[in-house]
Length: 108
Image (tube, rainbow, N blue to C red):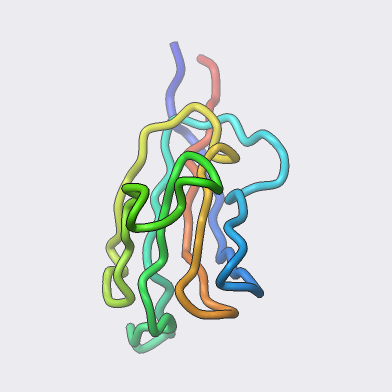
């Protein structure tokens, strides 16, 4: 049986709004990932445009059905996935990104 007993988090920013990137460059086994719009210490949105979440770089647009994450959605969304590196992020403006927490696998 597996249980999420530890998690790690951070902020993934993308330099180029035209180039989708994976959340991680190498495999990251997990139970699920929480993605939210980044905010400052006062809870103010850091993004000016939506970020799109998809299963591939080619599908990381609204027209391809990617999941939009609006700038004021700090609570975000949870995606059940076995490898966080299979999630692709596309930002609407250069230098923007997502806050994430990866709930990692730990065997019992």
